[in-house]
Length: 407
Image (cartoon, rainbow, N blue to C red; front, top):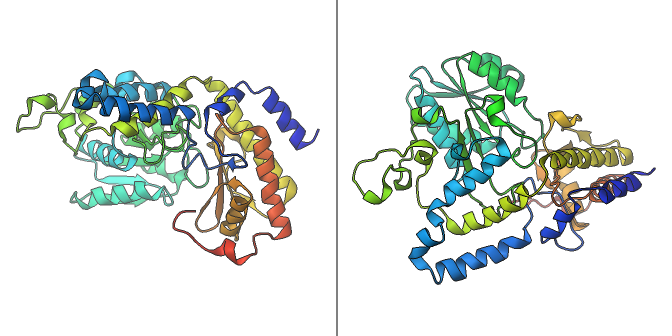
């Protein structure tokens, strides 16, 4: 049976096939960049329009109460909690991933006066390293260090906060979260996990893995839209000991008492800061509601199948690109990366053919597979397109070598 026939058979038996109709996918486009920006759920536009026209337009300021705006961070947090195995009161949706990283890294450092080192890996997602460096610059004696991932957990100690991205943004390699967390905690360290390329892409059970602190974004696999609010997780037993460095009024114990002095809210609410972005919250909630309808084991199984088929199609058609992503599904996320010296031009040639992936410097072409809307036939088609462009050198045209700010 050919690859295409196998893919078609998998699509015919796919229990998630109906979810594709819930997304506004452009005709003629194979979209494999949902790991960067998720596709638009059809329900989102109507929901945001309702918030604008009815809740804002007619309810006006009353909608903070009548439409439940004020409860949105906790309400959405409880929905994210279902995706990561957490309790409803352990997650809040607020701010950006970068801001939430700053909050949790600061809170983790403050848990013990011994903690003077933020330890990460070279090549971690840049904002994670930049936020850590910026925080360290405000803390005399605190420094940021990096080590190869195989050495990180064993290098941790009571003076250490580990900052780790569960699924690597470029390679797709996945940490063994439970093993790393256990080793780090046994050595007296605390770990802050970035789940931006994990949530909605791979199975997560943070309490079972011993995870105490984590952040993640809403605009990738959760389909919350560009710049969607992020989320923050803190284990319930740790929350009373945590202090947010961003002490805004929404994180106050009594925000509407309007007192001059700050007193942190009980629980996860102390990590709120400013007024929640209601339009962004509405868009994210539409994406979350759709995601929560899906059967989780079916999602993870399909993710593995999509990636496997794509890898097979590329390698069947061309020996040139080097697989960067782990071959085993248990060791990767839901995106696949190949390295090639002409990666940027190849990605541009693919986009011209209607296959949208992305490029990551210096030589990586990256393809994300969202099991809610990508199909098995698409995975094979895209892999064959990569191979065809390589075999014909279709990338070797001047227009494909022009760099844009975002690729």
